[in-house]
Length: 124
Length: 124
DNA sequence: TTCCTTATTGATAATAGTTATCAATAAAAT
DNA sequence: ATTTTATTGATAACTATTATCAATAAGGAA
Image 1 (tube, rainbow over the protein chains, first blue to last red):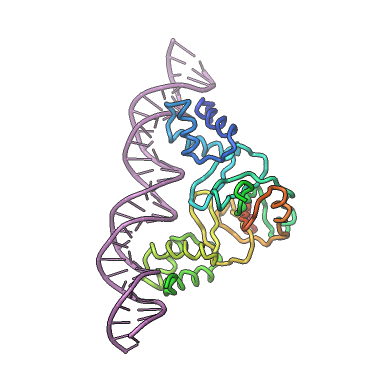
Image 2 (cartoon, rainbow over the protein chains, first blue to last red):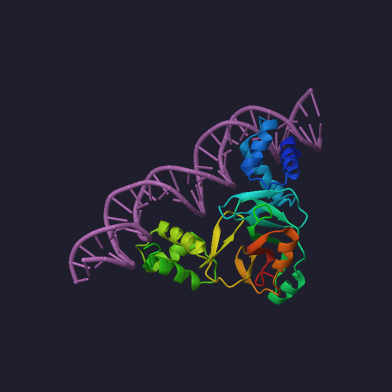
């Protein structure tokens, strides 16, 4: 009976998948609020947390301790632009060699987050 | 006259360089407090922020929105162990090809943070 | 050294992102 | 239709970090 399929949960996921701006929880709440005025802020935070735990969405951590969310769970990396502050998707050129890292460090790797810092194509 | 060389600033950097546990600001404050009982919590937070801006220390962002600090500014990556929760240094096998990424995405890269998630060698 | 300017400190209040609480609601099994 | 209980929405609480400000001390000038 756990993990009920509420419309709120569906909406949070749907709105996140249909944007590429990597919104914060509050930004996403405001977007949804326009179409679903009754939705609560805590509900958005709660469902983002749940969706993340279920690996249905991605989280990117930023320096000001604000989480940004990404509905695209295909592996990719991000750039934080020091000029405009936006968080932007990067087209990767190669994948990391997990196997070599695991052997060398005697660890098990299940995931990796890569965030570049620099200047985006629009600001350059 | 800006950026005065206070003993508090020296101590914060020194204590951070001399540990490999990637402490939080609060943890570092408690460590320092034992030897310097008069130091203020805000002073530690403040100097960590300044030292980071001067690229004299590194910051690693964690999922619970707590910053962890690293006195080692040589390029290296980290693993967050899902079992013990510790943040551990990784011995890298190869470097990323910044040039290829910059050309492909029409961006300028100045820095990169890589955080692996998995199981550390002690927990494995 | 001594004086002077002002950046920095330490204590505390304020801020802000996120989580916990809880009565009301609604999903889904019976 | 009824029952159970996970989830919602409103709000309070929590917590990492930053801002405020009088007191202090770093570092330059005399």
